[in-house]
Amino acid sequence: MMTLKQKVAVVTGSTSGIGLGIARALAGAGADVVLNGFGDARAIEDLRASLAKDFGVRVGFHNADMSKPAEIADLIGYATKEFGSVDVLVNNAGIQHVAPVEEFAPERWDAVIAINLSAVFHGIHHALAGMKQKGWGRIINIASVHGQVASVNKVAYVAAKHGVVGITKTVALETAGTGVTCNAICPGWVLTPLVQKQIDALAASKGIPEVQAKAELLGAKQPSGEFVTPDQLGQLAVFLCSDAAAQMTGANLTMDGGWTAQ
Image: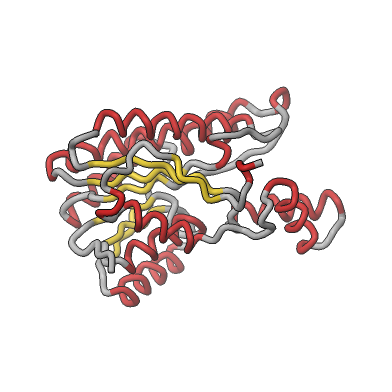
């Protein structure tokens, strides 16, 4: 069994969706976890407590706004001070905005780039020195199939995710031989609150049932006809933390139901 006992993982955007699935998987492997994200304070505290109880690990929470570099620094500082280190950094936080380029509001571009791309840099920037000092670290960037291919009306998201892939490769080269690895996971459609909004919008615009909207969304891109699950992505993240993946760095691992095979 893979064990991450005595390791500390920071997972951004982990109060729901992919981030929560990854946080659960890392906690299940024995890691102490620092959650991050927005939401109802009571619900987040219940989530934090339940993860700690279910997996017998320490679980903290920091409400850093990932669009603000100073708060990202505070997040890494909190994890280091309260838990002793940051051994695993999962850069997952993300937002989406959909519009044609000529109609894409500049402020939405800035917001998507800040959270989906710049936050990845800032998190790594603050966590990397501690990892190098310990001679072990795992940086996992949640990119997307849109880090490899494009879709219409998603100019900021596609640009950001291509950038995440570039950051991943650069950090992998700079950390080669240090015991630190940096890899990207590139999911296809995952049924998260972010994607649910797109399903709801599609259903509303076409006047069709939600189940039909889901089928249309998947059918257009994902040959498997099924969503990737947060748990599946979590298990992949655990593998990337294992000794078996010690020589895997700078990789883009696609889990997309065949999307990019077309």
